[in-house]
Image 1 (cartoon, rainbow, N blue to C red):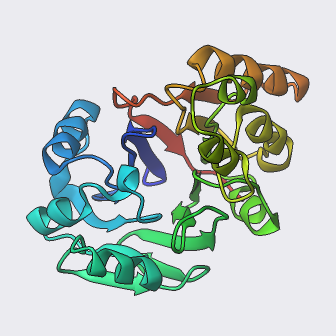
Image 2 (image 1 turned 135 degrees about the vertical axis):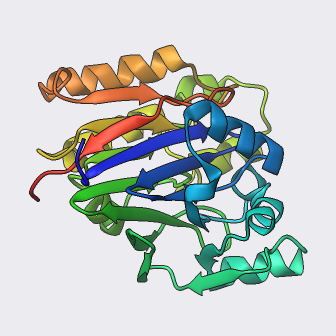
Image 3 (image 1 turned 180 degrees about the vertical axis):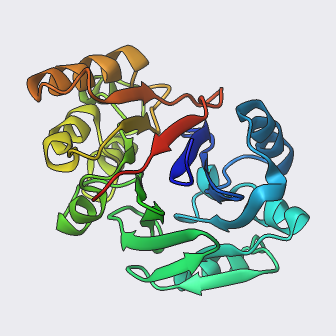
Length: 268
């Protein structure tokens, strides 16, 4: 293990809560806080992450499955919350803004402890949603969920990252045949909705590069998708690209934290 070793884990991912932790050297970040403070701490312990190492929290957008625990968790641990100025204003008007907030504009780059962070806009029906490319030494981690299509800015920031967290929210046939309201189906399928299994897989040839070691498929719908369908779609694409044995991929769970994945840096 070297100084370029980075640890990544998902505390949970889905429509009921999302949170990820990145640990590098003696510091850690939490990205999204979509569970209660108690649940976040419990899941961190299960995953082997130490809350005392956290130097800050990032928030992608204001939907409750991403920010449910933001205020209480950040205030309890005296953490600054980094989110866009528009999202911060929304949280403030709803009484859910932590005491210590560092606002940025979508597209801005900034440093937080040992981490270099690039934000980028996502097309989603939220106030000002963003994804993140997070650099830890030579390791780059791309995180993007909750978006309906992938313009070039998203592809550019996610391309050839060492680790990639990418949405694979729904199976189109299951969604269309579900009992969900037509309005909700249209929202999910829209350009500011969510990314389905097929759309996610179609992005992989453009995103996966020589540096990519780890692919985590996230935000799986419990009603309109199954892990088996996600795995089948992804494996087919990885086999087509002839990289299924070179790349580790896993499907994230809503109910259980993931493993603590180890990512090692190399030249870019």
